[in-house]
Amino acid sequence: MQIQVRINEEGALRNQRYAFTDRFTLISELLQNARRAGATQIEARYDAASQILHVTDDGRGIDDFQKLLSFNESGWDASTCAEERPFGVGFSKCLYAASRCIVASGRQWVDFDTSAALTKTPIEVMQIAEADVITGTRIELHGVDLPDLGARMETLCRGFPVPVLFNGQALERRFAEAHLATTPSPMGTVHLTGTRDGKHSHHTMVFLQGFCVLNTSYHLLGEVNVVHLDSRQFVARLPDRDKLIDEDVQYKRIEAELKDCWRKILEVAKTELPVGLFVERYYPAMRGWGHLDLLNDFDVLPCELFDAIVDYPILDNASNRDYVQPVTTAPTREAIESGAVTLVDLDWLGDDNAARWTFARAKGYLVFGWNGLHDKHWAQRHVRNLDWEAVEVQALCEQARSVLDGRWIWPTVILCEAVRVKVGGETVEITDDGVYHGDTLYIPAGETSGEPVRQVSSFTDEHDQFLENDLDADRNALADLICRLRQVDPVQMLDSLMQTLKLGKYPLLHGKTFQLNVGLGSAPGHLIELVG
Image (cartoon, rainbow, N blue to C red):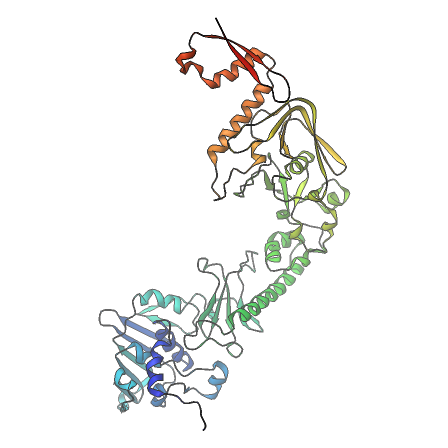
């Protein structure tokens, strides 16, 4: 017994209806056929009320009408087949999308019911009088349901190479090759955004045979790279042609080619522009496309690499790091190499490095983005990584200590004249700002605000909700604690504490006199006696 592959023609014709995933593929297939026929203009008209679609082109027309109804058999010439690998299923979409098809080209025309055609009923090809010969091809489809076709036509044709009119209006086709400044590449032609001003983008639209097969941007249509692929090298999936075969592999190749195109542009700009202007204009593109080595032989550095610590460092998970801001002028190579400017690498402030940030602020160091340069750049040798250095914090002339009974945090609080912070072999003395280190808040003489609680916590819960009320409560609690611990008059201190209790609300206490004794020790208690 022998078996072999067979095709059930009736089943194949029936199931082909479900091969196309998008009803608008009908339009793209008709436009594609017109382009392959050499059309220089295509006109589409659609009336939603009657559901009639007309597509007319001025191409070479149809020689053999049988090719319209021959599935998986391309009627194109050898050159087109070699260049574009047509599948031979495009017109079949008309049979499933319409109830009636009328096609005219040259001196021939057909008019048939699609359901009858799908049962393989013979269709008569009729002749057109000599005086009425059709230039190109005219297609009229009845019973076609294409809601919002007007809006979709703009999208379908935005990279199409042939001018298209829809209901009498020319479509913009903003990403067609003829409307872009393109450069050749091994994969096709490429338009890169930002080549003149450096405002590069990684959003890319990729077209094959005039239709989009890959789009990494759905919101920034004005700021995209555009690639028109060489159809001899790339194939779109059957039958919709809306995605590349092996898209993941091909996308990596496209990205690599775009990177190489940027390299060529940057190398030319480097030779033509003054160093400062080149760095200012093209640094983001060099960084974005992996060409940072082009900076290695320059003394000039981009400002984006340097942040000055301009305010009190706080822990903030919302990335509102207002305590740093980019410098307006980058330091010179001479200043960096001489030590006049110190560059430091610091992780964003957390609950274990607030002292390092306070130290760097006091010393006037610049926070440096070392990963924004090539690893062999000269500046890398002059970056001090504070996170790798040991840190010590010491209270000078300690005055008092207590525990903050906060709503969200409960650190130990030490009041002192100044806070000494030592990182590596260097020290600074802080007199105006609190420093959090090792579950302890060190509060020097000049600190009264309660703001140091923001070095202890970001006041953000496990659901990323900012706890503003808890922050306010704990900030006020710290400010009150600092004030009371600094009191020198015991009567004033006790009065301050009693004010918060609002004892007048309790009638039982009215008119009473008490004697209060406060104990001593690490955890002092107290004794209250009613007098009289």
